[in-house]
Amino acid sequence: MRKIKTLLLFICLLPASMSFAQKNDSATIAAIIKEATGNSQLEILANELLNGIGPRLVGSPKMQQAHDWAVSKYGTWNIPARNEKWGEWRGWERGISHIDMVSPWVKSLEGTQLAWCPSTGGKTITADVIIIADVADSISFQQWLPNVKGKFVLIAMKQPTGRPDYNWEEFGTKESVEKMKKERAEQNDAWRKRLSKTGLSSKDLALALEKAGAAGIIGSNWSAGFGVNKIFGANTTKIPTVDIALEDYGLIFRLAEAGKAPKLSIRTDSKELGMMPTYNTVAEIKGTEKPDEYVMLSAHFDSWDGGTGATDNGTGTLVMMEAMRILKKIYPNPKRTILVGHWGSEEQGLNGSRAFVEDHPEIIKNIQVLYNQDNGTGRVVNVGGGGFLHSYEYISRWLSRVPATYKQALETRFPGSPAGGGSDNASFVAAGVPAFGLGSNSWLYGSYTWHTNRDTYDKIVFDDVRNNAILTAIMVYMACEDAAKAPRDKIVLPSNPRTGEAGKWPEQRSPTRKGGVN
Ligand SMILES: [Zn+2]
Image (cartoon, rainbow, N blue to C red; front, side, top):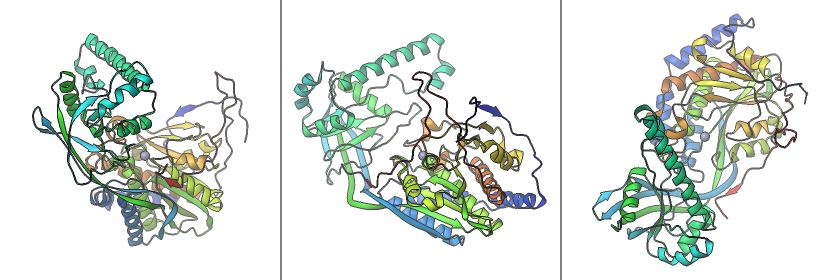
């Protein structure tokens, strides 16, 4: 570790060209671009993975199917690939979710069971709803609890508006926008207090409702965009837990508030499969001059299962697979070994990549550089130095060989700061590997696709994904060819201005190897 006097984060646009250019490089780079644009496999891969297989929840049969698909796909490109087991997880298979309002009038509702939701055993449960009460404290909550018996309990706040803020800001008066935001903030605050006064965590609350005989739990995790909800996992063990879209949830909630006694019918099918093995898919193109040094591509393969994980992280997966395919064709004899990791269970805490780091110290110490992509379909516009002191030198040198059209609006940030979490590059950074996230532009990823029921094929912007496959392939090629091994010196992190404590680099952490069990 070397000390630098001040931590200067500077943003610069990269110079259009640098003197590193070589004739061979130019021919290889041109061939990479030609293959990526003239023979792109992205749409085919996306259709096979996202529509043919679908969502990839850890421990689910679809996750396994995806790993097997990736290995056989690499096989067709003559790239050796393998599934490496690193742990096991509660196996669960999603079945149908049917949610209807049957009184005071009939409407099929937009909603779905959460991951790991218990099955209703082939039956449809019809029951009244009850809104979780606003009680004084945990004692009063326990006294109120018997009221839930035989009812579906509404545990989410009724949103005052289904219009996202950008829509209000475009069309609303300044006064009405401010009023809406103020009222919503007050309601959010009141709802948070309502839940905290139960004295229970969200998990314990679900279990308490279940124990008290509730027929099911209904939430609505609005994602602040039109028609979009985030879909995570259930905490109940016997009764269904479903998420209902904002519009339909508001309908039921308002009817219940008005004393119109809405009745719902819910059926959730699912299968418990016991413990299932979990894997990473790893593929490699062997190096010729320095086979024991690695240039690594990285993207998590798993997803939540409300949508099909198209942009989280289907698109990162596509970028890395397509880059591998192109490199194998155009640059089949790399100087260093090119490795790609398609990680399992990133969503539950970077588990697949943490396991790989723990299981392969011999590889970890010899990784030249790693590129990870995991924030949506957009073209890469941010590359940071990850807190590695000399990252500017090599990343800039390699980036300079990427034609301008593939790095439009790309900003770099050196030396940057180390990734502490968020995605799999953090697992490698924690082990000292120069590992970098390729940051995409947003396409409203955070609200519209990240962990939502709308994370589907149609949200993919293929031109941007193609751009990223080209950028990644060139960056891998340059990292393989570089005569020098990328230095691993780290910056000294600034101290916390509030506590005065010295900044600490993230430490390597062990994965959860047996998940979904308590
Ligand atoms: Zn992700």
